[in-house]
Image (tube, rainbow, N blue to C red):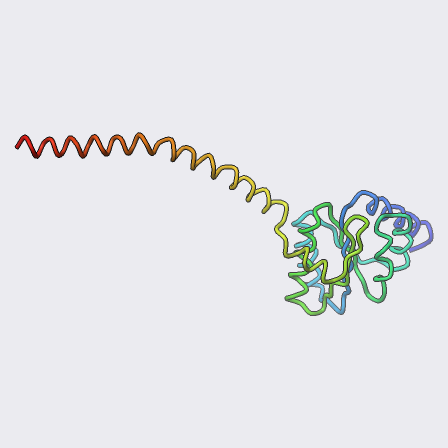
Length: 174
């Protein structure tokens, strides 16, 4: 990369850091091409981005953004991931790191809050935005189902009582 390419890269990364809500820093300790491709595919599936970049360029892009607290994590062979949906990217990275010991989650930032590796793992254990939406829809639809059942129950009980009374009347007539 020449200077103009580096400058353009830092500017584009600064724009990304200005518009995203979550950044995770990982350390790559020798991932194979197949593993890296699988990781990138999984990260793209949740709407996130995974990028390996020079630490010095990332540090320059972090200056003046809400994520400048993660600059000390940028040592050695690192990669950064970012997303607007924080739980999804954390889940993918933590799950991949559990299966593959060559990827280590170093930490990250959620807004202006710097996260340790344990904090990122705790965030990954939360339900994703889609899961929360499904739970909310389930909670909303359950009371409606119960209300319908409660309103129909007295009519059903009345019908059973009348049916039982009619049957007893039939046995007395016989």
